[in-house]
Image (cartoon, rainbow, N blue to C red; front, side, top):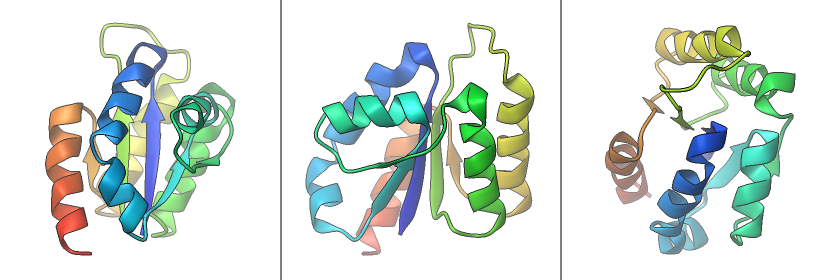
Length: 124
């Protein structure tokens, strides 16, 4: 099972906190984490194994969208900062659209991510 992780700058700490709450499940389940560059570096520093892609603005969002389109992902967790402007917003919208087109679960906040993650990990 592969889960993609993305977090805007103001939400990276939230992503690490979220993952810390599921550390046991991540350590005992066959879950592979993949993340955009900077988000991935924060996740690595917290002690998680993660495959790092490009930074979001440099194409990481598009890389994850490509993985979603190829049905390589079980879920995408994208903690967005709705109160800030992002120069790569077209890539963000494209990723969200690809998830909808290919029926890939997409969580954009910790509450939704927690519910989805709990459901996925109970199936393992």
